[in-house]
Amino acid sequence: MKEKHVKRVDLIFEKTGCREIMEKIMKMKPDDICQAVLDSDLKGRGGAGFPTGLKWRFTFQEKEPVKYIVCNADEGEPGTFKDREILDQVPGKVFCGMAIAARAVGAKTGYVYLRGEYKFLIPKLNAQLEEFNTLMDEFNLNFRIKIRLGSGAYICGEESALFESIEGKRGEPRNKPPYPTTAGLFGKPTSINNVETLVYAVMIIKYGAAHFKELGTKDSRGSKVFSVSGDTPKAGIYELELGMSVNEFVEEFGDGDTKAVQVGGASGFCVPRKKFGETIIGFEGVPTGGSMKLFNSTRSMYNVLHNYLDFFTEESCGQCTPCRVGCQQLLKGVEAVKRGDKNSKYLDELVKLAKTMKRASKCGLGQSVGNAFGSIVENFKEEIIY
Amino acid sequence: MEMIIENELVKELANKHGRTRESLIPILQDLVVQNRFLSKQDMVDVARELDISAADVFGTATFYSFLDTEVRGKYIIRVCKTISCAMKGKNEILATIEDTLKIKLGETSSNRKFSLLETNCIGWCHKAPAMLINDTPYTELTPEKVTEILREYIRK
Image (cartoon, rainbow over all chains, first blue to last red; front, side):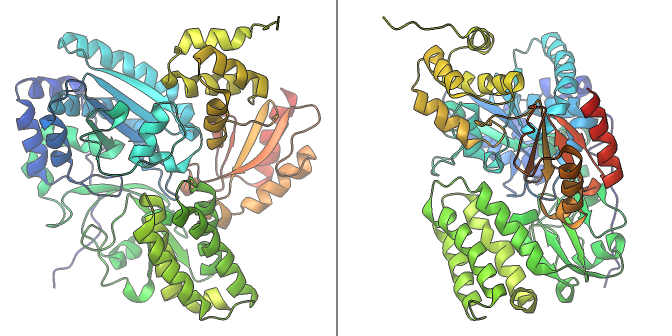
């Protein structure tokens, strides 16, 4: 078997001027840009992993004259903090990625939806935006970017809730379909991309799709920025090649006593030690928006689960019943089992409820509560009960 | 005839951000910057200015945890309570703040200088525990460090 190690990559934070990128894309037709990104197999880096080139092409193909580009900078998943670092270190590349997307789909207006918790970045972003606008003028492009701030609502990271919020409403997710590429912001075709995805698009234009594809695996091409936290001596932000196993990750980042890794934040999956070897971090295994949280043997997985459920109970928008009531009942349920008011069989009922939430909830929040719930309960049942 | 007292601040913010529905949240956010919270009267005035119902304004404001509709202090402290911060001593930080400011979680000091709240993940997990005071993040907190930070704010 091929020996693999965690491989560091330096694409996202590499200094790249937007001018050289603009010179390149001005010579490309919109569909060529979509094709270049499609050829790279770049998948969205916010966690859901939709092919970026396809998203752009769908938006491009819409006949509606007004279209939007939205940069999703509402980074709220517990354990994810890489977009903050990207916006802090290379904001110009984020705007440049939006300009590429705008040309690919035919949009004249872009929005950055920045979570309120990152408001301290605004002066820096505004300064960068002035430079960006000057550059757009040089290329005779009338693409303009507006920055909108969130106000402390995790759900607004969900794309349709984010649109509602920009439109000045409660951040309640919409029914899908229609998808954003058909009817997104203000009901117009919209391509909404994660901060990191937009920066990778810049690097794909710069170095070509082939270069990007050299890294990673068939299902998870390229590299990804990881947010590493929890019980680790090396907490921080790392850009790594995709395709490593949890075991390889733990060898690099663990403290020698890692019993579980939560991949993908509160809405992701808990991988226990016995599955470290067989579990690949990526779309073929456990997908992640970047959140990697390590827990050592001193941690109670009951406390971890309780913290996540408390989080979801607060952040559920309350619009649909399976999610609103489901989150509350899961939280009350594990508390009852812990107190001994309910026996351990009750956990099976709660797992069923989490599965129902996956099928019946309106958006990704309610649909993914069962990921953490199921994987923690399945692998650490004793810790939940006793 | 009922006298309508002009709300100069609301008018000014509507002039700045516009009077479409899209302007609502930026206006409410700026009101919170100015007054630290949204009063009922301000929300009614915003509704009148934007020609939408007051219920719509109230409904929107109460959806967002940073758009407070209760009186808050000049400095709003939000201590992160999500998993990494919880693991790295959030409770100790909270206790230190309560001791120093003589207020409990959820309370505002009687001179309206400080409010103490908890919040969900603020994106500093690798430097936990962390908190926000208004818009400024403070990370890798220890009881000593928090005491030092609060001393600065008390002096302000």
